Image (cartoon, rainbow, N blue to C red; front, side, top):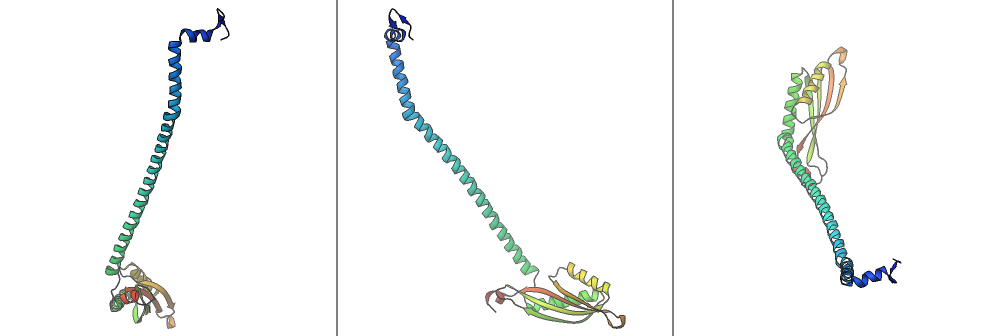
Length: 200
């Protein structure tokens, strides 16, 4: 740039000779810089902010859809459980105390007879717990027979469709090597509307 032609710096000479071309270019460059700083850059920042907000909105929407699906699944599961529970109450459990006694007394005596056990006696006692919908019927049976017959009785009881739970089993030796004496404590349940509605 320091070279001089005829005593004048080169840049000044170009500026003087090409002023009509150089000045409009410098003005256009200045306008471009001003437009970029004042319009384009702020707009690009706004677009970036909008894209970030859109991404956040999509993530929030995805999370909301997942929460909704989970809540719908929970609601559907609760409805299915309520339906299955109602079916269990109506199809499996006895409806009242007399039904529970009748079902268990007849069925247990029949199972004992089929297993070659001698039915000696049975007692039944309802046990209602506070704020419970179901009432438990405790059953105690006294039987006598061989060990194999007792095992058959237990197997048949556990595989039957009746809802009876074995709570305890006591075996006693028979006198003079006779048949075993067996005490079986069982439970079944029935739905008692009063038990669920009134504290006892």
